[in-house]
Length: 436
Ligand code: AMP
Ligand code: GLY
Image (cartoon, rainbow, N blue to C red; front, side):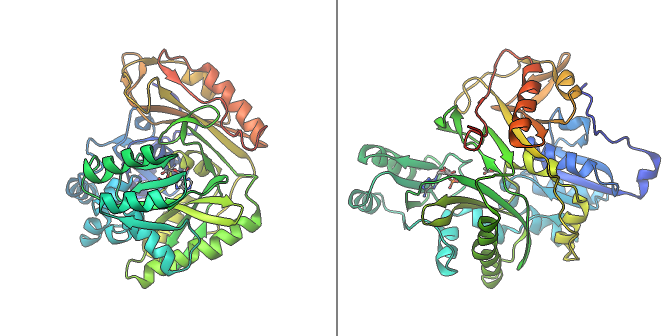
């Protein structure tokens, strides 16, 4: 099995230490498990369901992220001190509410607060009410009305399905035919379930991800990062769950961050309190630096994926203390970040985000890790005959550290070069906006 350079040895003394359960199973959860494993306060880590790579750093529990009642039973039975939730589906299923009813400590927003992600319409109404800058919009349930509105407006136009659609519910329509097809999908054929559509003004500019720890009105910013959503180099091809990321983002100045904190994240956190939906957890602002200033593209109610895989490795503070401060409402330690940059490549199965095959052997991970200053997060792997095999669309994320982004990119690329598998592709241009 893979040797992880920062794998903790579970010693007898760990009896005194916290038992933590991480809910989820992709690269984001691997990065959370990895960060927790660096805390001297954390003993045993469980991950449900986890994956083959996570199993090197945590005990995987065969429960799905939506089996909320079973997860609660597990946490009660194992005397889990703290549960940390990765995916939005668990939050939208009310895992936090269920755990809290039984007095369990859990890091994440309630179902009522998670709507900031699960309903695009709710998020847009909130931003309008609290004067948070975002693209102009209208919401429709009726296909004919939506079509009339789009016909009278400008192209491109952005059409967003109002509900969770695994990052695939957003269409940028260049013309009437594309808009009609997308609206038909979303409102007539109910491809994602019966819903509504937010029709939004198209904005242009670089996007960045601003994740903050939030407890009610209190907001603590993390370092910023940038995702690459399109499948192919040059930002071509279909939208994916994310093909790579880096941190920090030199295009985004300290003033931009200050502006985003004061005019976007803090008013939204305060707005959620005022709406009777106080938010606890990670509030993720998907922001765009447009010629008219920074505007919100979307909010998520959780850590971003793959952003977490480049942000948490830079965190030097104890993440257990941070999670505890938010979960318990106790003082937050100072958030310290490594001055090093991180940049990560996602290795995905050929065909992703469409259909793809599984079960291809992966080798060379030990060689890649032996380079040092490399993290490999497993997104979709399974234990193979002799090591790991591919088991998902996105399979691995290889993250390199460097004194600057260029060095981080070169280092991560070297590590990617060590990894052998017959069915993986990746984008070589991660970081292109800042690394010409
Ligand atoms: P979302 O799921 O809302 O983040 O949308 C997915 C992607 O669609 C975003 O990361 C943007 O690249 C793009 N997008 C969403 N809304 C807009 C908009 N109003 N203008 C331009 N691009 C957008
Ligand atoms: N990287 C975008 C997301 O986590 O939704």
